[in-house]
Image (cartoon, rainbow, N blue to C red; front, side):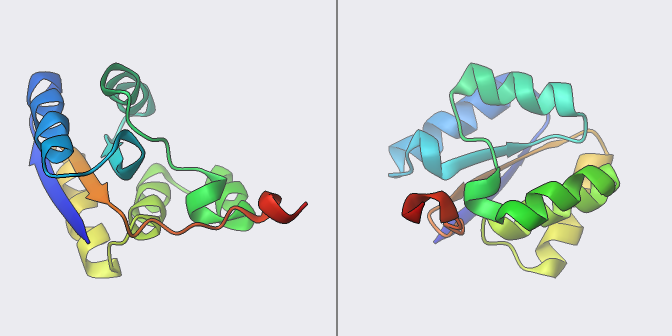
Length: 117
């Protein structure tokens, strides 16, 4: 299951994260997307939510993000937390407008291959 919310600012983002926690999502189930990396990082740090990395995307997709445009990278990360391509396209367009997208997802892919190493 996953829920997607779009907000305008950091105060709304914090409120939305708290609401998702009240609905049963943990810090590790909540992901914040913003078009600018620094804004995304700052909001993630302040709300103590999860970063999307190798665990969710796998090593090859994560490394490939370094070669992608920011929009392509964001859509790839959105798909990793459960969105389909159409949803990822739709919400990436919201990010282009300066909005923040928050996803509560227990569908994030667990591609952590290091567990067996």
